[in-house]
Amino acid sequence: MVRVLVTGVGGPAGYSLARQLVNQGHWVLGVDMNQVHSSVADAVSVVSPSSAPGYLWELRGLVAAYEIDLVVPTVSDELVLVAEARDDFAPGVEVVIADPAPVRIANDKYLTMRCLANADVGVPDFALPGDFSSINEAMARFGGSLVVKPRVSRGGRGVQVLERAADGGRNAARVWSSLDDSWIVQRFAPGTEYAPVVYRPWQESEQDDLVVVLEKTELKHGRVGNALSVRRVPTPEAPDIARIAKAASAALGLAGPVDVDVRRMWDGTPVVLEVNARFGANSAYAPELLERVLRSYARGPMLGRTV
Image (tube, rainbow, N blue to C red; front, side, top):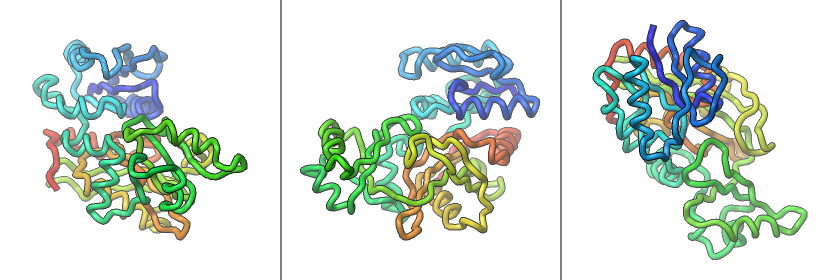
């Protein structure tokens, strides 16, 4: 049995992971900035937002008080902070997070796109709002519909599709006028959306990378947003999705669990929309992911991977 602290248990990623661990017989302390039901984990605790000055000290205190062995962050807002402090919790305590530099790049969707494009990993056309004089120029360059989203955000928050609809594009122009370069603009990929789950080993002695392809069968906001339902896709049905998810994770230099968003363009070509250096909301559909993490922990120590 491993004693595990899971952050963000009030959210879909943390809740799913906590339940998987409990069902496997591990002891779980779930933490969240909001009150959550005690049934989520063996123990629950309310903590400050990750932006609070004392957040890391709160986590360290809980690690010591509950004799935690393994810390698993699942909240996007905290990933860079926890990665930079991963060696400072307590002797023998492992943190499921990649090296700080790759985590920092993955945390910024614009930097992610630049890194992947430089590595010849397929991405949709992208830019910053400031690269265009108007929304009309952006639509002309990117061929019509646009996706805008915050460069740093949690899940699907803030994602919008801008297009010339029945109102002649007035709503799109209004949204565009409020954007600055803390946002990213992408060409809209209209095809099927996937959420492939990736595991890249920390230790060279481990097995090869793991990739499980999940298809998003229903999205929260119709054409965009978090997945309301998914289905597991056998790799032979979508080998290109598995390849691009693996290539994206490797290009960023990430290790451990990685959650990738991929969509197909109009001609079927897959492109990476974003990469999250953590367990995602759909990890229960790929139980091998948690198995590989726990196996790596048993081998220990978890070290950053140099690619």
